[in-house]
Length: 462
Image (cartoon, rainbow, N blue to C red; front, top):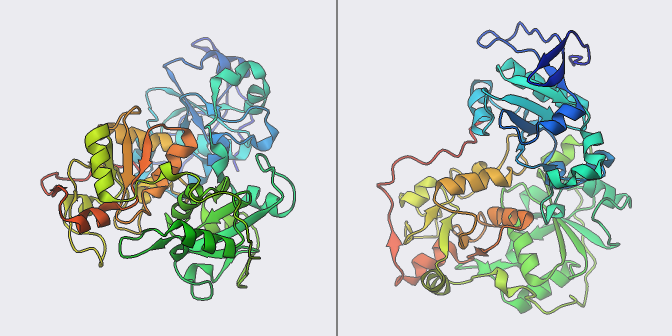
């Protein structure tokens, strides 16, 4: 690790007191590495809002979203800051790093201020940016800044930040440490995938103490919409799930845990969390796994009438089409570009290709199992604001009423989760998706083969 604390000459520039340090790196042959400087607490605070500066948050999603990690007093991120987590380093193709960083909106013509409570992570990102020719300023006193109540108005926490948690948070729950936002004394952890526990491939190795959740327990063919309220109640109680129990979900599949999260919220479970990064992140944190098949204790009383939140679900295609007509809701397709063009239905059990008439492309991935447009290089969830910026480019404004859908209600569960996390209003979940729309036969359809190339998702790191 390079030691950036070695200070050199004091410079006075643009009203700043900056300490320089030597950062010569012979490994960079194409771009001359720039000197990394430090910025004081006073100058950091003074230049918030200065258009010549960009502020880069190098912390985890959970810290950025609102958790008070490293014992800071006020959580969240600096308003208008850009997130570039230190865990991206080493996970981006070196030939694509330059574009990947600039696609985040990080501008080489501006002074780039990186901040973090972890100095190793701060140095890692500062070094990477300097190697690529950015003018970088390190801010090492972020905890002091965030501990000052006078700076609270400069910070943003997402309204439901607690919904996305780290493996460390989950481990603290297991260890009875009562981590931030956890006030319960009852919890269950579920690995989510299709199939019964002893046959589910993703459950072969799992978080120690976790149960398996079969997605068939909440949905049924041929449309693959939610099962009846009575069936879901029966299945949830069998798994020991009640309205008052904290339920922690994760999945190897990009959308399975999010699909079940939506179903549990619809049913009435009050506290549902997603473990960010799944089993990979759990193992990277050094936590224990097992191969045992765990069986939860069955419950008898769910605690509320199912569904507690029927408004979370627009179930069928005709209902959705009527709402589009009456309420001006924009349909947003969370499907692959080939599905959107009508080249493929995306599924071997869906006969027709196409999209509901007027649907807007909302990004996804290469196929029904891929949501790479919504994930970061380290396997964690992408920053929601980046997704909203993509949507804006597609003609979707913050105030629009939108209904998210995919083929059968899985992929759209990820952006729906993001909208709940950030408090984005007027967002609906259309469960029936393209499958129910094409089965109806009477509803208008678009074939978009003249749309050309897929819009840039600004997330090419492989």
